[in-house]
Length: 613
Image (cartoon, rainbow, N blue to C red; front, side):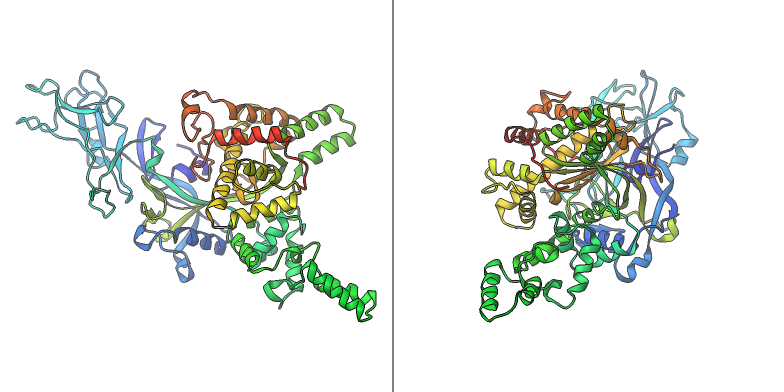
């Protein structure tokens, strides 16, 4: 069986249960591969530790925190070879008139007796198993008939499609299909008990994604000194915020300004407010100072018009920049949108290029596409052919997936990967669409919903207000942040799924998302984990962006599962919004109703407005 590394990273890591191509069901025992050396291990392990420490130590199994000397016991591995066992080992006779169930303890036993012992027909697996939030999985419980001489020899499974109504029956002589019992939840001996104080395993089909979720991180992987210096810098949040607000144009500019200001409070020189500077300037003139000296003082302590110094040094804002510095994707976005690190071309630049070279037809199409993007609340669409993304997977949960609701289990196996704790990694420089939504449009929508007192037309002011929303802790701001996340995430899924139309050569299951809700940004990238690009997204920007945006607009209004999907809350399903492999949040926090309401508001408002890239 061949699978891409990207598919392996989300569905075929240790302890995953899957359907094999050769009509088998199986469980992954271990995954081996080659050691990865092109990732910044220090950053990777620190991010994993920060993620995993949300679980108490008793709620982590086979996964110590990779900090300090403990990092020596970890290894970054590119998944190359999967070892699996046949699972579950509960099979039934394929002959419809027989259907007797056979249970085996080991795959070796199955290999020695692979046909029905009653009619010699082939056996087929029952596609069900039991799982528990402690991480344990077991084959489905098979009861026995209490009639003497029957036992398990004549048990059949009446599969009704529901575990509530499915039953076990005995077809032996004297029973004639008598019901033995219904399906039962197997007990578990662990400490993870339900409200009734009992630990019960739940039955699942092999396609049920609730029973196994891989925990992973998507990291921007730029391998140069400047990016590493930026990631480690205590003022990285200030640099990232200034870059998003348009106060600096590059990471180099921000780091240089911090270097010049070394030794000052907060890393940036304290400056007077506008009123304070007005009073000071009057004092200087009154004392007879010449204009050249006043200009020097103005440059040093007057309110800054740009750069990091233009960010307020008030205590609340200093805390805000530190908080933003802890949001890794927000920090990474500044590098992704720095042309010195990741080159990109915008739809606006493509339009201007077409007009300049006299390509009127493409120019008209891209002009219409710009209007369509504005109607979707989009400020900028860009394409990069060097999106440096890496996915690292380090553990899994079953049944429940929030911290301390289930065990976070690592992939450690003492017989594989040199006995070390494996962190599976895949990285590539691939092509991506970079979509940034309009901060004025988003704030106008929040204002219409009563979540903020007023909107902003100025892009920089609106962006700063968005950052304030994500760094406040009171209830009103938290609700506004939740709405922003839903809008950005849902529209990102709609845009991604709209690419799967057979025209750009990329299917939905080959694409993935990278979300930065604090900066109203989503990247849609080719999740092929290869060291080359297909140019499909470049072609999209050049020729098909209008039809792509129109398709996304249509999808928000209807679903093939309507009216059922339309009546659900939240309004989303596998036919309209869910992604097969590429969602960071496992298809949570999506709602077409919220996205449609946002688009209606943007349309009534008159579009997203123009703003800076």
